[in-house]
Image (cartoon, rainbow, N blue to C red; front, side, top):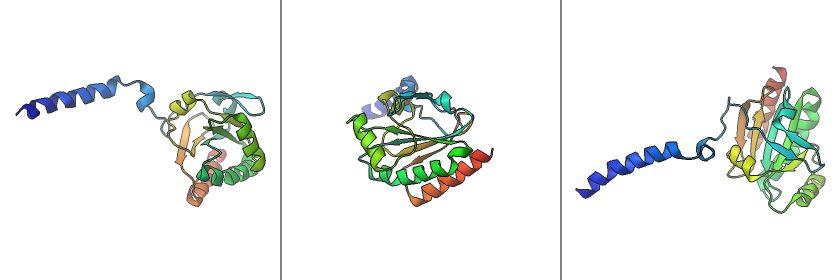
Length: 170
């Protein structure tokens, strides 16, 4: 009998607790929403924010140099940037590596990365709901999230390219 009285109170506590949690714990950006703003310094020393990419299609790639699927996505992102960069596509890689910028610079050189890379702060990762890598956010010309891809495969690569073509045509 005592258990029966305990469950309604626990249920109420869970419901109330859900609404009292800080927003970053349950407010992961979704397709159609404005992308969270960010400000980073690239490995070449340039400060960029989401505002720098207005009126362009942007792929924000959260990656790590040690991540196998991340390494597999890089040649595809390099090709997309080469193919569609003059049409308004921009790619920004945000590294979740904890070993520092020099490792990321070496990774960029070894993989012939042709787009800017920067270190991602914990705050940016929280704002974007990053819990694992790779995660790619495609942001439209108005700063809205058009799509989010977790992981990487040939199918994701093809879907990403089709979406880029569509967004560039808008």
